[in-house]
Image 1 (tube, rainbow, N blue to C red):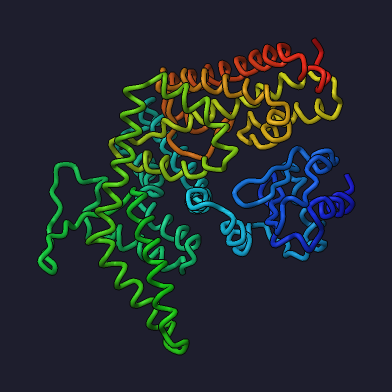
Image 2: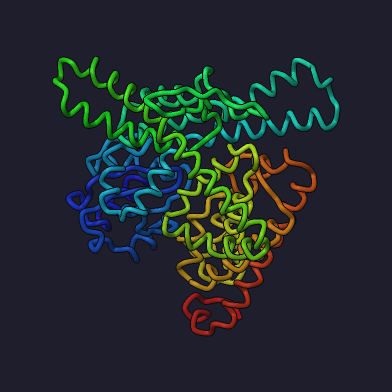
Length: 470
């Protein structure tokens, strides 16, 4: 592929340089915020060599090139479009894209931006917990061995300081000083506050302040309390900075922001956030336990449709809350999402065997494998949605696979990984958990494959349009 020519052609097909507000790229997609998306020649874009698909989502026009390729295309595209070459999505891209979103979509995008950077830390903690569990289960060393004590420290640290990590990431997303966000997280996990992870039957001390009884209990391992607090902190910081002379800004703004937010965190926002988090967890656990397989069928069948809207990014906050809640301590949602993802891969694999269209065949196989690795955009937008029936076949496979993993109570001890990589975060929870995950994986893929074959062969008109072998 000639990346320079591809970049030049992309620029022409999206309406030229004057139609581009900002541009960036992620792991697989070129992300453009455009003045007028009606100027885009989508059919020509999708037919361009190297392009797996193109679509508009979350206020951005996104063109799928795939891992590695997108970096090279963007490097050639950026100078032509007049944007900086940057590995991360610049702040101006986020702001420009957010302006085009409805409030709910904007919330989902913000939650995604907060929690996606934390995935490596959560995955590392999950794997360390798994290693610690294996050492204890097989008795490889004594229970009071230094290695057990050290691994216990290593594996729990990410959840103990989770409010600090969230505070930093959330402040950056909400337009506040990220280090002040980390300070707020530190206040909410201060050693003077009773750690809820070690609470047991102990009662926290109560402080009388302004006629109120304040329980001195910390927020280690929580999600929503610090998320809400840092959002409020960002508003406070912005208002204080607006009213403070520049010469005093460095002294006044951080002082007032931390002082006011700290009081609000422990007196008002923290308790409210705790109730919110427990409420969400209670509803999910109730639905999961009471509706069981039906919940798996519903969530697994609809997840790929939710992915198209971009709303799935907001689930990371909920998953983190499930993991952080000691009464739950596991992520029972992620296996369902994984079934939906690999099922789309199974549908794409069926297209590979059915179609005689050379370009579609060349796209379907690597896209399907990408879905098995947890990256579904190429197969969803490049193959399955284009043809329609494969997407439905993938939804059927996701539903059946989702029902199975719920029935067998498959869970993960982290979030962020699906497909084959997810084996790393389901295996630590036991052999039966891993076996049932792999069985669910196979059920989802095979069901999606068969459903796609049946649907495409029953649809005579689609057969003609796509040159499918009868």
